[in-house]
Length: 133
Image 1 (tube, rainbow, N blue to C red):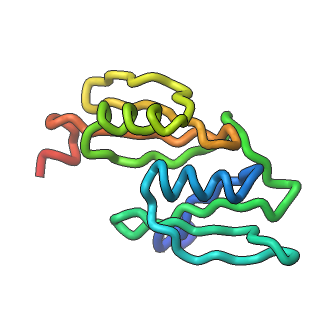
Image 2 (cartoon, rainbow, N blue to C red; image 1 turned 45 degrees about the vertical axis):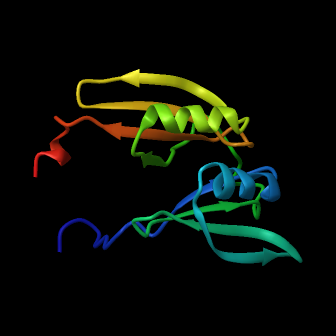
Image 3 (cartoon, helix red, strand yellow; image 1 turned 90 degrees about the vertical axis):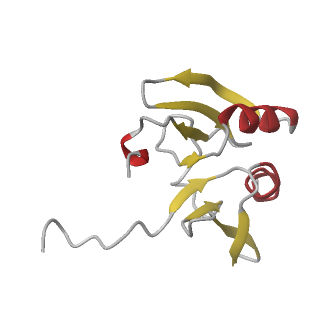
């Protein structure tokens, strides 16, 4: 065994300020399919969303020790067309935290969720190493 025995990424989690507002952002604006929902102290405190490739992104409001931050780690979603995706999120009222950036092998933009967490939208260029198969 190499390292500590990691098998896979279990999920990406974001602390949020408002579960209902964030459910709308991740479900309706980004279009992720809602999965498991768990209550905490009689209220929805954890909601999971599934990506088309089967990864899980969870939002939570269960702990005062885990707070939203634009400076924390972040999920990065590969999109079919970055320009179309950015246009759609802006029309839906979401805040663009970083406009589209052009890099040698990809393009990327950051969008802020309702709590200020940033989510990256990414589009590989044809010369990206993952596209050479």
